[in-house]
Image 1 (tube, protein in one colour):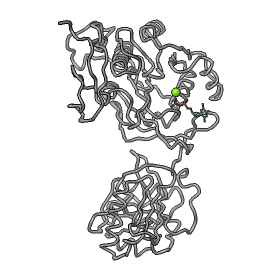
Image 2 (image 1 turned 45 degrees about the vertical axis):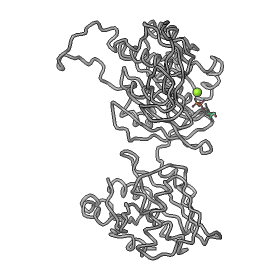
Image 3 (image 1 turned 120 degrees about the vertical axis):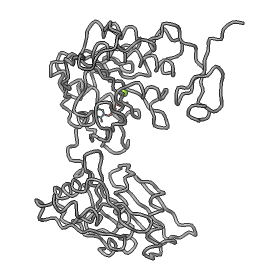
Length: 458
Ligand code: TYD
Ligand code: MG
């Protein structure tokens, strides 16, 4: 019998199977298997990442010389922070995001900054023509001559160019348009994406160039193609944001060279992406004064405190089953916190509609928001506004107790910086804070042990 030359791949996790399966044994997803031609023997997926370096024996740690331990700063502070202090030479960085969110613009701006630092930059596009790239570049500003543009989708040609020009930084826009002749399936398919990334990994490590890969995301919000892509690269960044809001958030999801909790905030303008240095100010712009149901809370994104406005609207429902809606936070959490208010404080909210909204369009699941949500809901319920100069943070437990949160001092300092002078926080955080708060005389700290203490302040 002739050997079968097709194979089935799970599109979500990359699991291989000889026959079609309804449910993937790897990730338990349904209907994710697609048929593809088998790869030929010369697959670069099997190539070693030490290409260009003949040695295959083990090396003692102290013998490994790092010639270029300096990170390359892109000059875009928000990006450098997410990368953990700049680009590590020889790393492979995946930038994922919805179409039209600004991935190409961001990377073109990275190329722009780097071109002025005398680095050789190569921008390879498989999606846009030279003319289209030029039009975008004209919006973004002036470029130095060390940036070269190439429109190419054939991976062998891309490899030749990279080997010949030996650039410091390469951008591949996007991985779904690249194809290798060794693989017979269509560009964008699981095996093509996998093969292309494997080859780029070989080049990045072998030639010590940094390669940025743009990846499109699926409906579910992960990079199209197999999850293996995320395993292969050194750093995974997601560019997200509301299509209708101008601001964009760059989030580190995986980073072999730094923390993954950091975010970078940008705003899309007519001249490309502008860094938002102080996101708190940005998030609080337009906050109403003296309105009930509006409370400012402080959350942490990595090492960075951000103030956000929580808005709640609670009123008597016209229906038997009250509506509960959350924008920017988890609806289940809202229901739970409302239940705590009912049970522990006796607020009769079971017949009330409740809407909770994080102004600015952020999506946050941090428990430190709990106390802010509780106070916003209670403030709207009682129709009494809270102090405009007050910020709130703390986690709320099921017994109505207020529990401690991480890094209280950073949160209080951020609030002081933006002109707030009252801070409601978990009682347990007070003792650790008093030492550090010597410099902030104008700030009044109110420790609360339970939700009741906090609601009494309204
Ligand atoms: P783009 O970088 O092409 O997105 P992606 O590569 O993620 O698909 O971003 C395109 C969007 O950004 C497009 O809708 C136009 C807008 N844009 C601006 O508003 N200002 C600008 O200066 C540029 C270059 C783009
Ligand atoms: Mg693009």
